[in-house]
Length: 170
Ligand code: ADP
Image 1 (cartoon, rainbow, N blue to C red):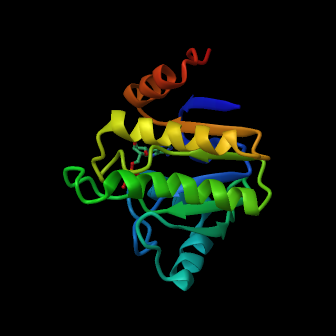
Image 2: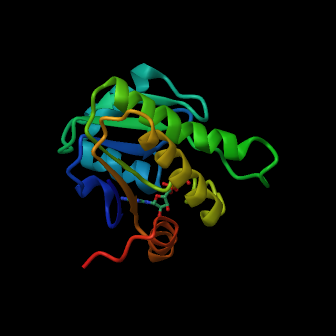
């Protein structure tokens, strides 16, 4: 089941939350800052040990103070006009998170709008990619029962709902 949620991803009770991280896995602003604040300082220590993550890939950590099992840190592409592989890299973020969730037998996962903040990806195109990758994954044999697209702003919330054909939360 695919859901859209307007609100803070750190408040969600799912097995995995995905972080839109940076390549150095250092605590930044946006959703990354919120996740580090909520998880506590242990998260930054583990991220330092991991050392970094290439664009389009994912690294998993424990969740520390967050009420989830795992945090998946993925690094979206910075939008530079679209001809530098941005669509494929963004798709790869979703694909790699979903594949890892399958390997780790996770039942539910929440994604933020990867690259749609300071990385400046055009929201409609990013939503198209996110929804296409999730649908493709669900078409395969998949044990994920709940996939949440979580966003903080209403414009993105509307775009996800339009694309998925789901009505607003009450
Ligand atoms: P990126 O660097 O990949 O663009 P950002 O963190 O700047 O990542 O933004 C990604 C998206 O996450 C933006 O749409 C932003 O509004 C949203 N966001 C920021 N904080 C939160 C949060 N606490 N929960 C859910 N989404 C958030």
